[in-house]
Image (spheres, rainbow, N blue to C red):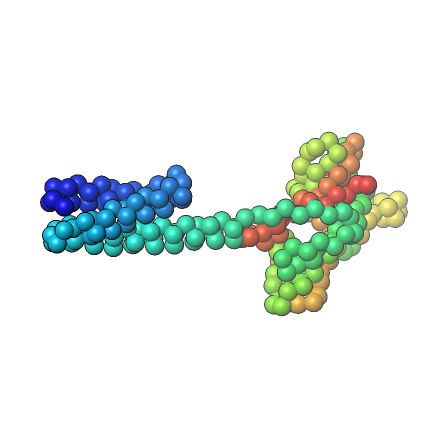
Length: 241
């Protein structure tokens, strides 16, 4: 093999090897691997056809080493990217009211749904805004793992039968009733908040209510919960039969 041919093949192989990684990362992993193998193949060809000449041998060995290095880096990055994408991928789960659903190390159950005009928190009474009603969703969160961990629910959205979404609220978002009459006291529903930052030991559970406020003419249809941040779950619980 002549020196000119060896140099041309070496440059061609280097181009394949150099562009293998960006093409594998941004275009196609398979195409990137093919370019690596082509570079290695050209290097092996140069070694085999060197005809006892030093230049093709040296350039061929360098090209094979560069190709193997590029192949290793490409494969490592590809595997790492795939592992990360799998780790952060959100899994979708569905359930019905009073149906426990397992989300990783957690068992979550939406136990009940109540609609009311008034609630009581401790000794204070609150009413819905004009034209609105209060929806209380009772939730149980059980740790079925082996370590004490914090309540994993970080987002709750109520979807009504009108297809509208509502975020959770607190009593402060309602109308505080300074002097409730007996009718309000008797009709008010007791609200015990679900502690969103509670630590839950293995085999134990916490439970409580989540508040929403929606128009009177609408009804709660489903609750969408997000559980865990990385590699988490989006749980949709049907609230109506």
